[in-house]
Length: 533
Image 1: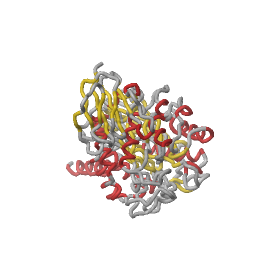
Image 2: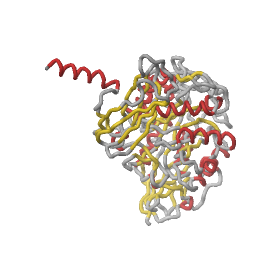
Image 3: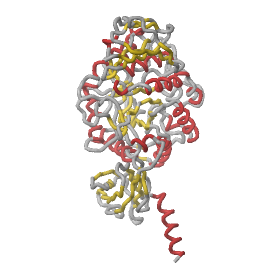
Image 4: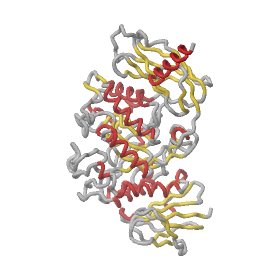
């Protein structure tokens, strides 16, 4: 009898890592994973579609696509949102020996965990439509970092070191590319995500490596923000050269593989979303996401381009992402604080607005040809947080986005300047100042802030001196950003005021002289006000 018990225990220990134990426990908002093997006597066909139908403890039905993981293996991943016992059943299209009619159960339990996604749940757009929040209603401040090549070109230990450094600086999200593109024709080992054009052949070995990078993000409580296909014009970019049906196939594969992770999807990177190209990405995104219970979606356009009106009524689009780009002339500065974004946020339906690419620190600017300083980055960041209802923004550093390991200009990005290696670029001062910025806004009800230019009595006329102001919905607090110090006159009854130093993260008392405030010096400052309603 004892031998039989030991055999069962050993069998469960062997099967559990493979996802085959029938009653494996999964954390609420964690990930259930199960592999399915085709009949050994059949020839595997990666084009076989495998659907897993799940029934929650309360009886709600869910349908999830599995994905081919090489050889005769298909795999499904699912994020349970209810505690209790779940049931599943597989359906293969066309019916394929061994894949259809597999059934089983798993148990979901609520666990105590410091990971914000396990503690508070998956992300969604808030009821106001202006920011992201967790399933339990906890607001999520988007402080992203740009590591386009990071997941592709990093060694595992370097990726882990980078994530720990960014987490210490209070970053909450990492943007990266998941398939080959013009700055990374393959990953560090030379593997590509797929081959072919008219008939794409997916390479599971490439994605098994990508699994490790995305798992590492979520394990640290960082949001994964993957670009599925880079789409700027060029034969190196799959979002540009792939036929629509193949782009849809590849994106559906990625969504099946990573849809149970804590992600925000970027279907296409660095392209236009108007006219013919806008129609193309509207068709692709509808085919991939409409009718599914998907994670939030944001688009990443080329610099200083507006597409809100064009995509305004797309039900699959959750967030308006924009790129103010790497310019530094008056036109570029004016676009950030007073351009189309400052008006489009008022359109319906409301959506969060997030600058996904302000100027990268140490990147050569388009006009002056000088490298963007930490000041340039700070200024663009504070303006971006206050030009629409505050939701967050993404920082970028030259050398990190392209993941350089020695000083050189990023591949096919001529004119951007010699980039520092990533391990030096992480030390640029702007990233530490992002931490201070996050801490400053964490002390506010930032999710209630909306632009209120009426607070400022005398607005500066030069674009570089524009004073940005936002007030909470209930009208009892406000923040004002002065990019070059000086004096600001406020049209409100002020109860209390304090200056925040964006360079050091320190607060100091502000003197109220008949609603007029003099900044401590001629550098940039944030003024926090408590107002009488």
